[in-house]
Amino acid sequence: MTPLRTLAVVTAALALQGCLAKAAVNVVTLPVRAVSAGVDAATTSQSEADEKRGREIRKREERLGELERDYDKAMERCADGDDEACDKVQAIRAEMKALLPGVPVEPDNR
Image 1 (spheres, one colour):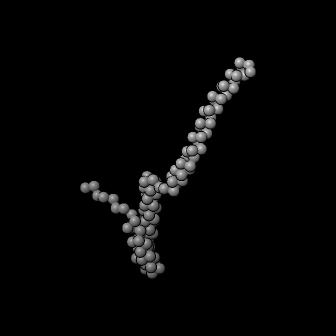
Image 2: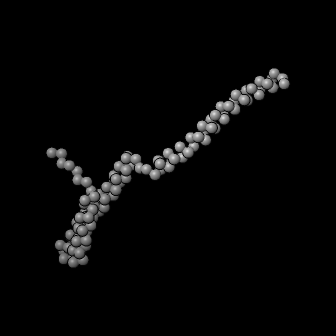
Image 3: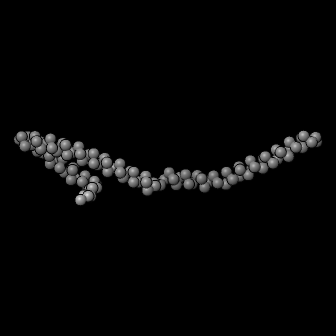
């Protein structure tokens, strides 16, 4: 063998050792990474749960605001003698009563 060829073989052997070691590490750690990715996908962090709860509360607050506007309009029509509006007032009031426990009350800062 020529010295150049020997040098090339030695260099290739040294380079391949690193590749083989890295491949072995990747193969060994693959199941662990797969399981942790599955756990991350299946669980909800506290901040994600808080964000979801905040979105739900905002939706309830928006719906409550819509109901309050509809209630005021229906009350005006009911006061003018519209019996159908009076029935609607009762239905709106029932829905508002059902939503209120899910909407947090802001504390008074007095």
